[in-house]
Length: 161
Image 1 (cartoon, rainbow, N blue to C red):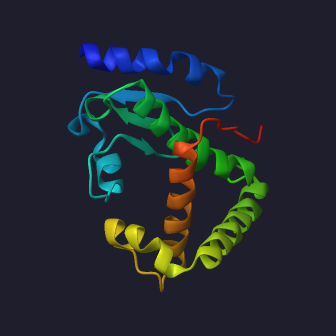
Image 2 (cartoon, helix red, strand yellow):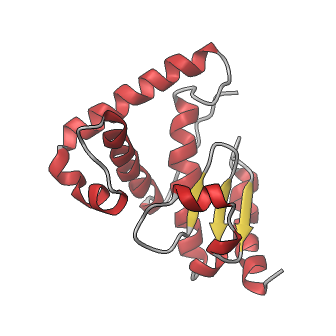
């Protein structure tokens, strides 16, 4: 195992184990070490530091310079992308998940409407989004919330049991 991968793993030992219901964390050395479907998921215009999937969070050690950047990326993925799904019950695996997905969609729609399409231009450009498509508007709204979560000093994971 690359020494930097080991160091990045050490940065997460406390925060990962203390986060109730956090997804498994997979730390890889380079983007090439990510599963192919995970690499395809990332359409941004920069190096991949971290990626959320419904099964796990992946961190790319080679693209993470220090502990502060690592924790910021972790908060972005686990704190928002996972946390918001848990809060709305999307991950519950039962009939609540359908209602939760509808509530999450309504919430993200409201976020997009509140800020307006012009304020999401960077997401449209970075991810090739078409704001005539409701799902694309939701991707932009969730991206903004995740970016905010990554910058905040404290994140509360609210997960369904």
